[in-house]
Length: 392
Image (cartoon, rainbow, N blue to C red; front, side):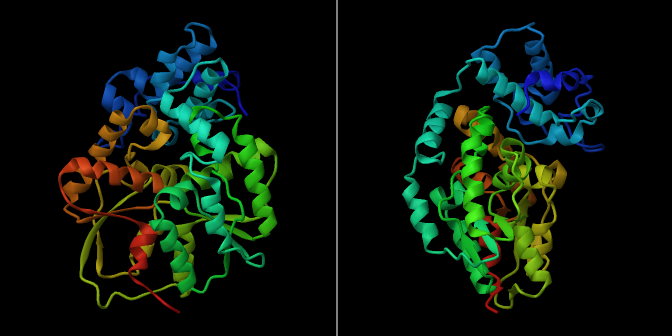
């Protein structure tokens, strides 16, 4: 894994143009959550690179206060997508990944994370998930759908099996209705994304090696992911960490469903459904890290009774829900502030249901909704389209 010294050239490239804080002309909508909240350059992507370079050059000392500033980054990835200056300096890491490297440097130098993050770290060590739930709970659930002959395997993720099962259950029902032959993993562990968020990059090795072995046991040709954080860490970090290339194709669940629909293996009926206005929240990891802004929108086109109303900040310029980067644990009030901003944007659309395709976003919006004082529905995309799926 990369060290701070490996990105020294890129840390020096920022010219303070603040492209990492706002969207494209002419709207120039606010995009960086910590900069929106705290209003100082230090709290945007460029400012955090300045902190990293100052740390590297020993102009500042590592401290809990410094780590706290860095930990306000939600890792939404906008700065990494919009800033092109760092790309001229090898090894071409995007801004958000360099922020992660800076945090990891702080951890290695003995700076401790918040109490909430420590608790998650302990849970990960003991139960191999961030909730501290007995690993037997998921193990027993997965054993009910173990099919060693299946060419498709499902990596379900912690949120979908241990906290909010709506998306997981909906996905399984859709696959069954589409007569897709699939298997779950025998002993799935957390992908390790929470460790990465907190700066514990080295600690991901154990979970990466375990999950790769579980996939190899199945021998599937394709792995379907129900969480974009999981897919990102499998595709971007596991090969770096283990030096092992998984001999299977990866697909996000909505893209897989779209492929099935296009092949007429997933069919929809909406003859008995009323007209519905919805808005779709593009998850940061799905839109920017994985580059998928269209699979859900294309799926919705198969359902004529559904009208999609776009939020002002969408697709590559989507706005963070507020749960990323570990801020929901390290600073719950700040995390809620971000989520409220996004929910108000949804309310302005006039839609009566908010759809998303990430369990972190789904969970956070469900929590924030309690503070809004206005009733509306929140659904995962798989949960939503299940209402319109018919059996083969």
